[in-house]
Length: 313
Image (cartoon, rainbow, N blue to C red; front, side):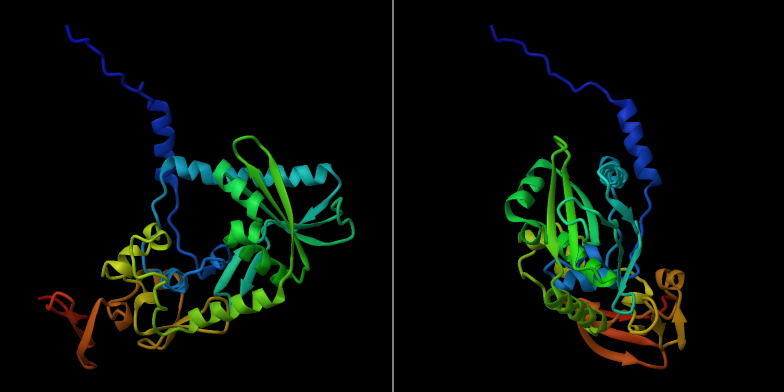
């Protein structure tokens, strides 16, 4: 006689589900005014260009992941208290980083003086958390190789505040082990990255793809995959419009040649009725334009014709 086995069901978790739902419903979706310092260590120029031009919608964060990110914020207060407990003078938390006319931006976790292994050195301080796998990678390879985004953030922080060293901390969320590493300011690296960022800000066309294979590890999880590899149109904002320009004066300043005016952050997000896609962001060949009607005509990859700016009757 066949053995009867009952299907084992996971017990219901209505309270946990409600907590996650609350995080999802209250999470803010936001666009950065510029290139985040935490992204400067990433290898793909095209990704940074699409970030700057708001090519894709901000990623919708799931409740558990949102709560996980908040843990990082909570850890900063613990780190600060830990340093003060051992006699470090800690200050400058969340001071702004503004580089390349404000188009590269972020905040530092803080700075300090009185560290036990460099008591007279004023240093930038960066606090991070990591799961077991990523923690071991950083411990084994060091920050520069194991977490290049964090390395770039530390370097640009030192550059902004004129500091020669950064003390980097990362805690293993599994067992509370803390790893520390001194990072020395690398002027050549910073100047190269800032020149790269300025090149991206000034670019009139998207940089080349880092890989032509959308299934590559570098592209598979990128939020811009649809726009970059799958012929999707970018979002309609001023930053995807052919009339807009990122200016190299002010603080992340953008202007519109159509209306001959500076653009506020809210205006950039909303765009206007005269929006026309930058032709280099359209997955098709430009075949015509009409300055009077303010339209641009494209032959798309499927052979069809699309008129950007045409008002449907």
